[in-house]
Image (tube, rainbow, N blue to C red; front, side, top):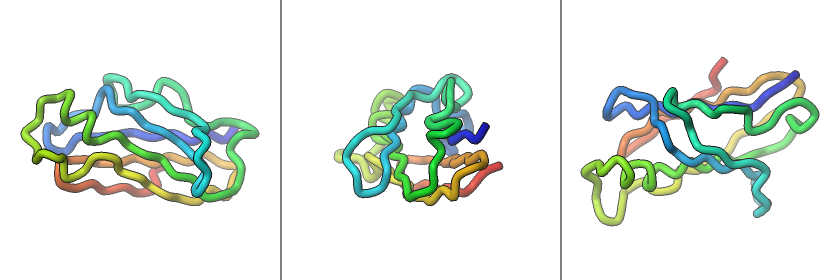
Length: 114
């Protein structure tokens, strides 16, 4: 059964980013398909999409990085340099997709994970 998952690592602390909100939408559509908060391992307790819901198309995951760093009481600029981090990606459907992200207050990196 295909699944769409994510994993968030805070490279500033060298730890998983626990308590970070993730919102999933189809690109260019306002409706929220799924939203979740990362657990202590920086992962979601369940996939954002799974099974027949993993359909081909362009999607956008928005990572609420600013809220995460404010909750951590991290030293950041005011306003935060990064607040909402959108990651737009395409799914061909029919297989697992893992979209991890590495964050810090002034930058981020993402890739297609396995």
